[in-house]
Amino acid sequence: MGQVPCSGCCTFFTPRNKAQNFCSEPGCQRIRKTLWQKQKLATDSEYKEGQRLAQKKWLQNNPGYWKNYRRRNPEKTDRNRSLQKIRNMKHRQDQTVYKLSKTIGIAKMDARKPIGHTLSGQYWLVPEVAKMDAVKIFITAIPGRYP
Ligand SMILES: [Zn+2]
Image (cartoon, rainbow, N blue to C red; front, side, top):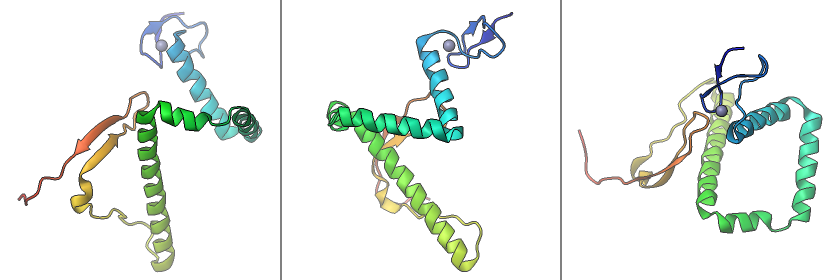
């Protein structure tokens, strides 16, 4: 069998069979397993429930894990908080659009609000493409008007 590019790192490798899309590098195997689990969680409710119970049990045996995690990883905590804010905002927007559409019969509308001068601050630039890290950026509003 000829060489094929790895779906994880794009390096060419010789697969053991037609179904093998990832090379044996640990990082690529981790991606493969993550994708497998994501798929499994989405399609197998028994597996999902088992995972939920196992996580719950593990957390009971490791109290304070997340508290310690957040203390040890302030950057990641900051990032997660920002991402959660985005998810909450998106959810609220979806809810608003849904309620509006129920009330006034508009199926689709632009729910974006004007941002104005509240734009200044720290943001996480989150790529929609998998395997790319989020980048922290700083946006500062410059006073004055532009044509
Ligand atoms: Zn690879």
